[in-house]
Image (cartoon, rainbow, N blue to C red; front, side, top):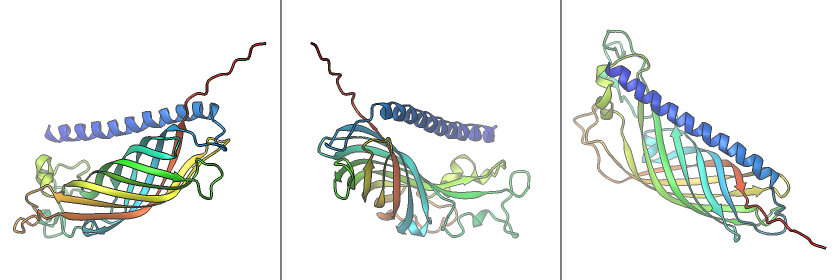
Amino acid sequence: MIRNFVVANEDHLILGMKTFYTYFLFACFIIASNSAKAQRNISDSIVSSTILSVQYSGGFTSGDLADRYGYLNHVGIFAGFKTKKNWIFGADGMFMFSSTNRIPGVLDDLKDSKGNITDQNGDVAIVRTLPRGFYANAVVGKVIPVLSPNPNSGIYVNVGLGYMTHKLRIETQDHVVPLLELDYRKGYDRLTTGVMTSQFVGYSFMGSDTPINFFAGFYAQQGFTHNQRTINFDSPETPVSTDLRLDLQFGFKAGWVIPVYQRQPKEFYFD
């Protein structure tokens, strides 16, 4: 009963995320089609537009974060507005995920003499510990029309300020491991939260006569975080640090951009 409740809630969460991204991508597709039909010739002047984008980044970890996780994938969305002076204001949200857990022996206290974790029936359980996280930023950026085909493209820089959280997702597949169910997982997940800052420098391209629009470049982010658990079950004799952590990432970031232009007024001529 308990296991079914947990699985059902996890399934609903996963289904909700998939549904959200499905609707978002569908909306992007529709907007892109309409935008393509109303694509302006932006080769001569800077134009304002609403901006939507789907983005990916890969983060190499450093600082305190490197003690826990390796390379992290980020997938998410951005929504904002580009002004007639090439300033960009908006917000993004990104999910972080990986399969590289560097925390040594996090579940060793649950293993038997053969190195196995058993479920409630005495069978060998398949248990995975996977880094997961999320962050959201308010972003301010500027497009500088250098080495660009039009004044709406060029060097793109931005900075961000927001919130981040990360932890270990503990998956027991179809097995019920009593010491890893419900709140017991919190004793192993290393939940950590805090504020973060980010910087990006790269290139943004907005096509003059084509719906091809994108950005790509390099980014860095700094998380000023704290542990949110008071005890780790795998090392109960060691106090959990309450000190400020410095969770660093840096890497490559790219996105597919959908600018939504305002419709130009129609001109009427009378004889």
